[in-house]
Length: 334
Image (cartoon, rainbow, N blue to C red; front, side, top):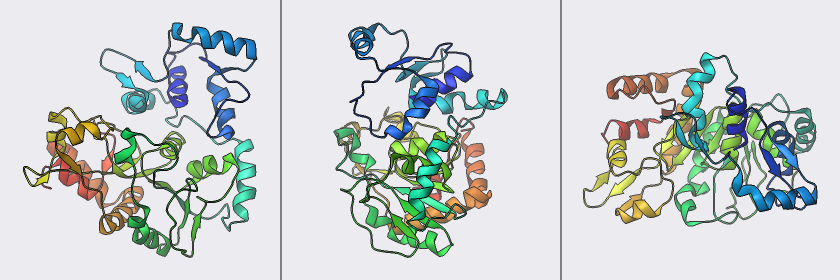
């Protein structure tokens, strides 16, 4: 939502900062993000003003959740960057919503130094979403088993990269590996996660808050088990979550998913109602995807294969690139 407001202001579509009411005891997941909120919102914290705005918020003419930019560009804020990306490029507007601030950098560097991460180290930030933090029915297909990623992590470490895992203390423990820094059970300043998401060689993981941070700091993304087919992000290599149709004994293609009206849906229930079963990728596919991510960063074969797919299918609207497994879904060969 903050990135959406930023881009609306850059495009001169939102002349004033929207007002955000924020009481001192407001439950904010990461208070270290406040400086970035203040750049984009008029923060109101006076108790009387907070109470007044709370009573009248429904009168606001502006929503940060859903947008209508034009008659053809509208929807959830998560689709906004993809919708206006080419316009940002054409107008020479930075497509990264945020830039790291010193107030974030200094405490993060100080903390990470004690874990052996130097400023010159190349690292991947890893976040595999699991239950135990924010849980709902619509999160069912957004969670993955981190143990399926051990071999992929080992391969990244073998390439001289460090892997820094973030998340919460209820997450599954991973085996100790030289070069893996697992912070999931570590109390840390809020600045640390922001810094890692904004400085990584790439973000590797599922769709969640850290993914949005990296995306809007302009970091390249390897999105794993992505359970939505209708969102197009720049700088992203996407490994889509296949859906198996038992009646046809095969995974459905992207075109078939779109035909069922499920393209932009993350909730599990509509897929289950159609008798579709999520087919979470296993170790071999994850190893393949991290290798392809290095190709993606270097402009290698996976980029050529994606270009060929977009020409073949006429999908020139897609900003996202896809792993080889997901290209099969686009070409209907899975």
